[in-house]
Length: 214
Picture 1 (cartoon, rainbow, N blue to C red):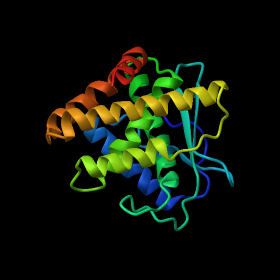
Picture 2 (picture 1 turned 90 degrees about the vertical axis):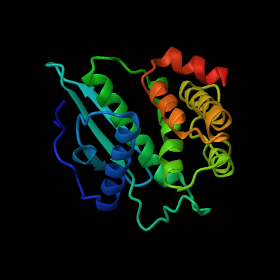
Picture 3 (picture 1 turned 180 degrees about the vertical axis):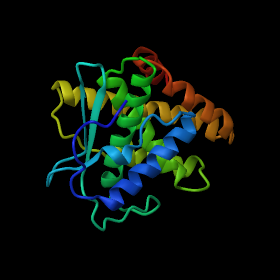
Picture 4 (picture 1 turned 60 degrees about the horizontal axis):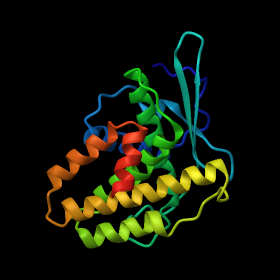
């Protein structure tokens, strides 16, 4: 896969650094080979625009992508505080989409929008939980509530996008709660990482079944 969309626009130094750190974190956890460096694909979002991964397939089969990220400015990114997590979550979500799609394209596998959204919701927890240091049930439960309960949606219920995002949010919350019960409670961190890797490699139907069973 090659970066073929022209230009990267205004340099987003802080945003590229955060995106690169998120990519390293996801690749390390899921034991993925680097397909492409996300920093080469980052472009600035328009004022007021949320993150967006633009994708198209050229006639020769090359997947072309550009990741639009909003400017973080001087926003506080301290996960342990009560700071707004949305700016950081937008970057994690965009990088999650990028890594997931790149990995699937490299392996010749398709990826649906729903499975990408569900994986991104899990990846938000994964990346932010790792930044908390000593993770336990209490810290995990607080983070889970911030990510999946204290949330608003851009799209109305009953719309295609609204239902997709709500379903992804609900299933990710259930899956993370299951991780807490089965692994965090007994501090079985190695097995928890194994479960996360197994989930990552599932297709949409397997992800949905596991999320609903939690």
